[in-house]
Each structure stands twice: as C-alpha cells, then as structure tokens.
Length: 423
Length: 79
Image 1: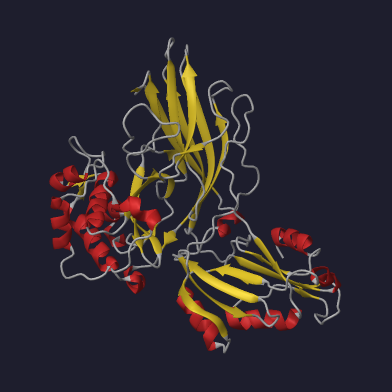
Image 2: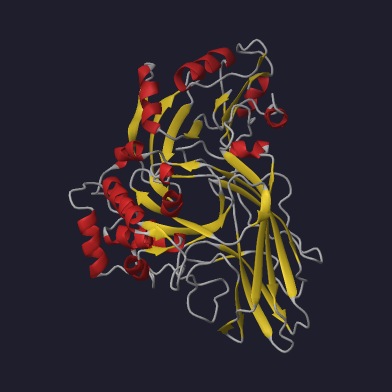
C-alpha cells in the first residue's frame, strides 16, 4: 500500500463504510515515458518606472484542470501596497489573473511567478474513435453558446459560411465536418512568420495571406467551425521545447478545441501538425505534453475591467497607464524540467476527462512581504462512504464486474467481525 | 482495490452499527471514460441494470446497478 493509501485507510478505519476516492493517488509505475512532463515554469514581468503615475498590470495565471496540475509556488517582486492578495477571474471565460497597481515607481519593478506544473498528454481519441459521436442534430448546450458567437477578429460572415459549406460538402456529422475543416487549414496555410500581420489571430487576414503562426491557424479554424455551427474555442499558453530540459521560452503557443455533443471538448493543434506532418492524425483529438495552458477565449474583459478595448488574447501581461495600454513591459519565460511526481497519476488517462486533480502540498504563493495564499481555492477530492456486508464477496464482485484490482484484504470478512477492511 | 485513478476501500465491522440509524440509501458514484464499454462489460456479467444507460438531466450519460451489499452503483461519463 502506498503512503497516501495508508493515510486514507487510517482515516477510513473509523468509519465502517466503503470509501471511494475518485482522485486517489496511485503510483506512476507502469506509466509510459512521455505521457507527462513536470517542470518548474518561471514567468517574469518587468514594468518600466513611471515616477509620477500609476501602472495597472494584469498578469495571467495558469491554473489546474483535467490536463495539467499547476501549483503557483511563489510571487515575488511586489509589496503589499501593490498587489491583490488573491487571483481574480473574468466573468466570461473564468481565466485567472494577478492584478497589481504600481504607483510612482522610481525604478523598474520585476514580478516573478514561479510555478510547478505537470502536464499530461490529452487525448479524446483519434478520428475513428470520435466518429462514434458524429451527429449533427444535437443543439449545443447553453454553456457553450459563447463559442458559437464571433470575436472581433474571428467573424462569422458570408465568406466563412460559404467557405465552410464548400469545405464540408458531402460530410455529415460534426466530426466529419470538423476533420474536413482541420484538413483544409492544415493543407492551405503554412507556418511562416515573415512579413507583417501574422500573430493577431485575424481569421480574414489568415484566410487571405495563407500563412501565419498558431494564432492565425486556429483563428481560421474557429471561424470556419463556428460558421458550420460547431462550437469552437481558442486556448493559449506556452510551448515546452521537445528534447530540452531547461531554457528560455521565446513566446506563446495556442491551439483550439471544438465541442461534440455526447463527448465534450476535443482538442486540435493544426500548427503543430503542420510542423510535424507525421502527427497530422494525432493532433486531431489529442495534445502532446509539450505545453502549459494559461487562458482561453478572445476579446477578454479582465477583472477588474481594463479601460482599453477587450484584450485580443491573454498570455502576456497587459498593462495600462492613465487608462491607455502601456507597452513598456518586458517579459521573460523559462522552464526547468523535473521528474514527474506521483501526482501525475491524478491526471486522467488518455481519452478520459477525469475529475480535476488534487492539489498536493502547499500551494501558497507569497509576495515579497509574505502575502497570503494567492492560489484559487479548489475542491478536488471527494470521498463517498457506504456500508458493505461482506468484504470477500464484495471485493470479488467488483473484480469481476468492474475489473477492479484488490490490493490488500485484512480480517475474516464475515458479518460480526471487527475492523475488516480491503483496499 | 481500484482501477485507473479510482481507489475503493471496503470496511466492515462492529463500527458499522453507528450507521444503523442513518438512511440506508448509499450511492457509489463513479466517473469513467468509455462508458459504453463499461456498460457492456457490466451487462455481460449478468448484473441487473436498475437504471439503463441514458442522457442525464445534467451534461452526462450514466446508468445504475446494485452491488452485493445493496449499494446503488452509479456510473457516468461527463459530456
């Protein structure tokens, strides 16, 4: 029995029930290499001084989800008068930001956020698996309706409707249509950051220029998907170089997800597929481990709201001085790989959306003067307790019916025996 | 015992008496991937399904059956 399991049993022995730990810790033994990457990620922001003025800064904060375990270990460089004691979430997408106000600074202010991250491969299966959900008559649930609506640079216009209809002609069902659109973007855009105009995620520009970076690839994909009434959303974070264990990260990476009724969100990464065509099929429905996600969505209204227009996408810090965007902000990102901890087992197996992972250890993020916990509170682990009448019969039944594995059984296991248990 | 990320602990003994006055209804609630396969596997073992696989009123599909102790086992896959 693992230490974690032993600890769990200690608590359970006081209660004569079955306990189900939906996010229980298990050993990583048996996990194939490459399924998860663990690393320290450092996000550093330097704000140029404004001796007579107040700079407002919004710094996106990564958070845990079904595909990544994120612990914000520390926030340094701000004092108690400059920063909120907690992260804030925007109301539309739920992205987290750290908000700070830097007034009358006489010298540059450098803020450093240090994370521990474990990212696991995220797969909803390949095309054949997804085809089981290939239907097109289910209305999207209300909570994904936003992802059928346009963004400023991702319009749903007649041009995209006509294009999407042509691309998906003869295709029936959302999966078949999504794959056709994925294939169209893959074959018609090239990953090329030459010239100007790329990187803004302007779907019309990408459609005309036929090149760009990940933002442009996925903006066109999202525009065409929404034109076909398939919900699609933009996700952004940072790439981790494959084959390297540390170093600076020059910039962001982004990808997209589309929604399938009966299954949920399905990831695609067309620009990574373009760079590695051998993974064309993989990146329709799966994401590799070489990334950390920060935010979703376009046209963001931050919390507290910025004075300027909606933020196109949020992965770098956004700053304002006197109500106007303030560009004198430098940023630097780096990572250092560490061994994958046992906690990676908390993440879901490929093809399965598990419950959110459990935070392990201290998740405190403290400012220079010892600010309080800045991480979001999360309720991640549930223990369900029910009685059992016979240990051996019950364990054998669960082995047979659900394929469970019995790890340890103690006692006689018959009615009236005291403190029999199995784990 | 368990499977994948799910870990189940069974306990039986005198202390079970503490729950005699408590409601008898107990639900074992499991979330899975590949629910169609799980459903087929349970049925193939001859287990009586007490509530057939269906779309729930929340974004999920699920079904129910009873374990030998009479506990209600609910298995579902979120949409």
